[in-house]
Image 1: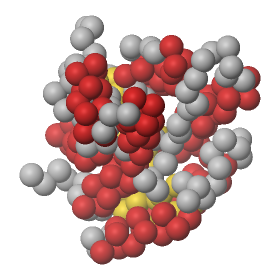
Image 2: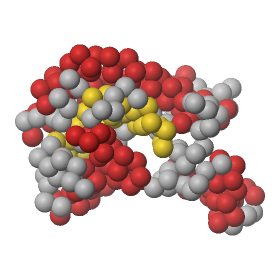
Image 3: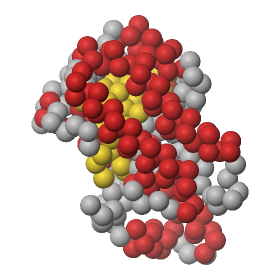
Image 4: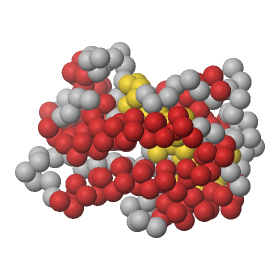
Length: 260
C-alpha cells in the first residue's frame, strides 16, 4: 500500500536506537526525509546512512532536549534544513525504575524533563510548521500510564501525563488543522526489555528462553512486540488513510491491557 507520505518531512526524537530508529527508517522507506535526534552521535550517523540508502535525506541533532532552549534550536534546524515539517514523533525518554522510597527528586525531575516537558516544548516550537502543513503529531507514551507498576512509578506517571496532554492538545489541533494522537506501546523487543530478561535470568538461574516464557505468561500477551510494529502504526496514522484518527491513545501491547 502506498501510504502517500512521499515528500513529507518527519522529526523523530530519540531515533538513535529502538522504537525511534525503527520509526525513522520506516518513514524514510515511505518517502519521508527525516530529522533524527539522540545523544549517541555514532548511532545517529548509522541511522542517517541507512536512510540515505533509501534515497531520502536525513540530518541529525545531538541537542539535549532536557534543556529549555534545545527545542527552539531543533525546530529552527528543521526549518533551515528542510523548509517544512509534516510529522513530529515525540519518542525520546526513558525513566528510572525502583522503589519510590529510594527514587530521588532528581530522578523524578529527569523523567518528566525528557519524556514530558521536552515533548511539550517541542510541540510548542514546531506548531507553526505543523499548522502550515496540516501535519501530524504523535507522542509515544506507554501502557504503564494505564496499568501502573510499583517499580515503574516515574514512568507510569509520565506516560499518564503524556496521554492527558495529548487529549488536551487534540482540541487545539481540531481547530488549527494538526492531527494529534498518542501510542501506548507494551512490551517491545528493545534493550530495555532485554536488560530485564537478563537481570531475572541472572537472579533466578533460569536460562533466558525460560524467563522470556515466564514474562510472556505474566504479562498475558500474544507475543512481545517488535519495533517495526510501532513504526508501521505511526506511518499509518500520519498517512491520509489514518487522518480520521484524532485525539486518541492507541494501546499496542499484544492484549496486555484488559480494561476499556
